[in-house]
Length: 238
Image 1 (spheres, rainbow, N blue to C red):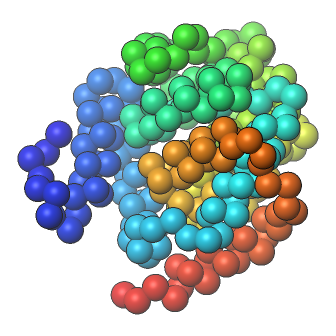
Image 2: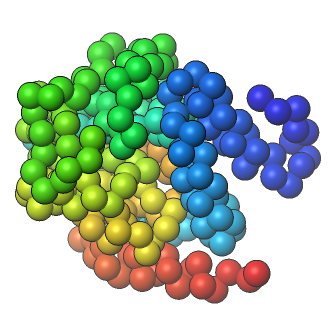
């Protein structure tokens, strides 16, 4: 990690950058993931690097959806593995939901590295994609899934998702919960529930909501929630 003092105004942001760089060095994160992280970081600046009310509402709704799912599955890509591996493992345990590796940039070596990385952070097992099971409505590498995981899931948690697979999952009748700092993205607008927040802040809150004795059952309006997030972005001072 960089030797950045806690008093530095970008201390937390630089810590996250270091996690992504460490993920690249470990063979877990694609170098393209650095670009994706930087894009998300820009939106986080506009949010004031804070978790807002609309994100907390989405987190409560997501916890309800995940807790009441029959076959929830947690999808893990390189950036998510680098940023929140322990939190994803804890969420998997709390939901009794399997973790499954799924990446966009094809690399069997990186898939194996992510599996080992997640096991290093406490995962008992991690499902891997196979060529024997594939999603409909998508042609990229992300179509390949595990026949006991995403293929048969009713709810898929996909933090830091790409839009084409989110669309495919929805067209197949699956609910999708995602974390996306950009409320205008295809993923954000396609998912059943989008948590517009930094995954580092959102995951601990989601885990707490899932572990709560009672999960709020309030109705959730995804379109209105995204509109509120967009208004927040536009209102932030430059």
